[in-house]
Length: 496
Image 1 (cartoon, rainbow, N blue to C red):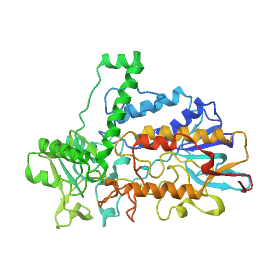
Image 2: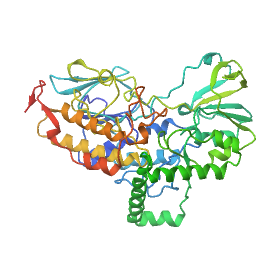
Image 3: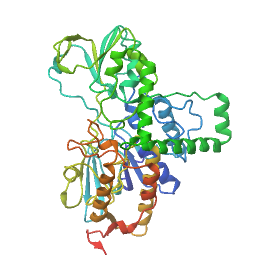
Image 4: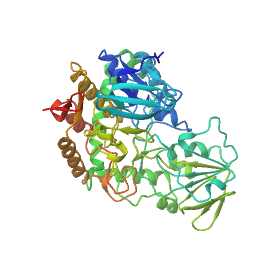
């Protein structure tokens, strides 16, 4: 277990999800052992620990949704469910002896840069104080559930909760249930809730582009072959990576590939929803890929059930009996599930991160989060984010992006190994040039088109998604370059 008496670490990692655990594993592979992983939860797992709703699963192929250095050889199906992904992270932690570095139930409340010593000072919610030379936030982009402030919600006599806070052991048998939201989480839990509820009303703000999932369950012979010959798994991984990279063209304005994606989604809808009126409600009125493209084979059939109704009239307010919609109709309910997404724009959540000269990250990002290569921000030396701004994907595996970032960070750590009192601060010109180019490239992307999307901030700037392919990101971030940074001495002076 973790030696809690130690107070100074070379690297302090925030979060024990895929990003933080992968960072720890890569450090161990390089012989770097003086690090800690702070985790606010009672177990590791990140977003997959938190999202325990029925039907929770990954919509990226499982042969891609794992680290190259720890392949998920015996994953049972092409789109793995939540429990298998948690088990994978447990196996990753065991293989690289990560639990001795993890401090559970430890919420970080403050991180502050000390210019005199060139170190980060950390304070946990319980008052524990730590020091670290490098700070690696792996806080993710979807970690703070968002429930809209509906009028009268507190008066509702039934139960309500966010899908990422699903009550353990919840039984909805015979209940009148509503799902507010019909996007990524809802398309997974709605089919399961529909099997239990006496009636389920799905409140849809906007329709989604949904592609067929085409789940594949691997045979025992296939699993045995992957275990005996991991190169077969690697071949599958390479093939899937190339396939998903080619699919990136679907996210670009006016491409033939985008038209192909529209046809596939429209054909999927037509094949599963014969009712013309319902099909019209489920047809998006915005550009393909402006919002997250979803994958499901059972969501549309769930909406065809006699005990399920799709409601496109918005919620006006709550009353003790349920929801009153904008047409004045009362929907009597026992339980309301909020599939309303996350506060995706506040990467740091409630954590107070203070960099050089007393500037906070909240102040630095007042006009929208941005970082060089999605990892570093001027004025926040030796801080390298994993899954930071503009590194999310809609076409390939985020795990591949995390692995690129982790290797970059290790190069930076090793680059300062012989100078223990120095620090790295990304040059402002490099930072600005990179982000200006990224936003210029984004103009040809559907991510920037006119729809309401969690990819964008209130001003319409895309701050979550990467503007290119994974291979293009790898070309930029595969090699750390010290010339992109100012090298700071212990008192904050820069080397030329």
